[in-house]
Length: 95
Image (cartoon, rainbow, N blue to C red):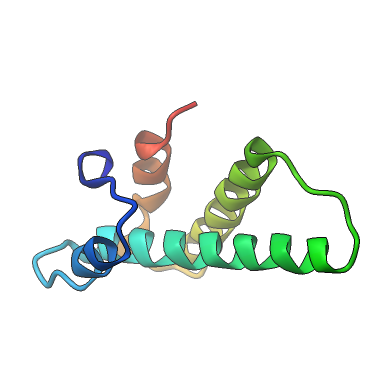
């Protein structure tokens, strides 16, 4: 997934909509996008309500934690097909 990094919205939608992607990759990409948008929205709302701004590293940690928790929840429900998603996620991160 690292080799397809992009900041262009149209490219991102094209990657997610690609029918040739493995379902595991599609799930990770879509949920990563969802967690990122949610985190940005939370930051926007907190700033509008007078809370202090968070450092980018804090936001990245929040997104990472949200994705890890979702993957653990899916794994815990017995979806064996997505059993390796957590390993894939850890392999795609830069620490």
